[in-house]
Image (cartoon, rainbow, N blue to C red):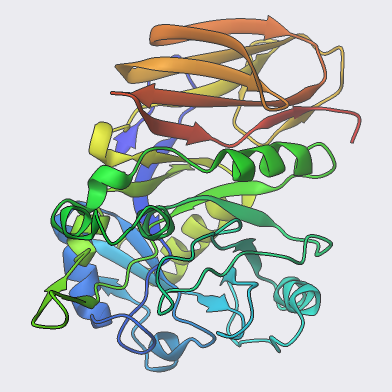
Length: 354
C-alpha cells in the first residue's frame, strides 16, 4: 500500500483484482487457493464473482486470508443469455431473466455493477461462444473496459493456439476501441464507472486432440495482468473485514480507482487529478462548463501519456507528467501506454451541465 505524495491529496493506494471464478462455478480453485495466489502477487484484495450465485459468501468464505481481503459478488446472467453483469455489494442474487430488471434489482438491493466483457466477439471455437452485452437501454452503473481472458480467447486460432497457451499474457494489448468509444459516449449522459477484470478460471484445456491437457492462466498468472488501484482515505483495514469491505466497495462504486496492465510495468503511484482553486479532486468529479480546471498527471514510469476528451486525444506526450488547463466541456480521461501496449486507464472527469 502506497501513500500519495505531499503535493496531492492524502490517499492510500490499495491494489486488487476483479472478476474471478472458483470451483463453485466454472473455475478450478478454492477461495483459499485463490487468496493464496493473490497474496503471492502482493494483492491487497480480490472479489470473487461466480456465475449466478454467491455460494462462497453463503459458505462463510468471505473473510480475510492473511494479507488478502476476499469479497464475494456475482456474475449475473443466464449462461445461455448474452448479457453478463458483474455485481458487488449485495447479499442475495436477484432474478436474472431480464437484464434491465436485473440491473435495477442490484441497485434496489443496495449494490452496484458493471457490464462484463461488453463487446465480446469470437467464432473460432463452438465450446467458447461470446457473451456480449445487448441491453444498452439498461441503467447500468459501470462497464468492464478491459477483460483479460476475453482478449486472449478472441485472438485464439487453430494456428496460434499452442503459442498462446505457452505465452498467455502476450495477447494483452489494449482495450477494445469499441468498448472505449461506448464508455466515453455513455459518460456524456451520466457517470459510468470503468473497470478492468481478469476473468480468471484456471481451467485445463485439451491439446493435441486431447492427448494432453494444459492449465492455462493459473490464478497467479492472471494476477500479473489487469489490476485495480483504489484511492483510499485511510489504509485498507486488514483486521476488520466489514470495515475493509466498505472501503473497497465505496472506492469501486465512486470511481476512485484506475486499472493497469502489470505486464508492462507496475503502476503504483500513478495519479490523475483535477485542480480547481488549489483544491484537488479525483475522478469522477463533475465540474460546470467554464470552470478553470487544471488536469495533472504524474506517472512512476516513463510512458506515452494521452489526455482524451470525448474519445479524442487532445494531448499526447512521452514522459512522466503533464499539466493541462481547460474549461471546455466534455468527458476527460487519461490513458498511458508502454512498450506499445496499454498500461493505465483512468476513470473520467466530467465538465458538463449534469
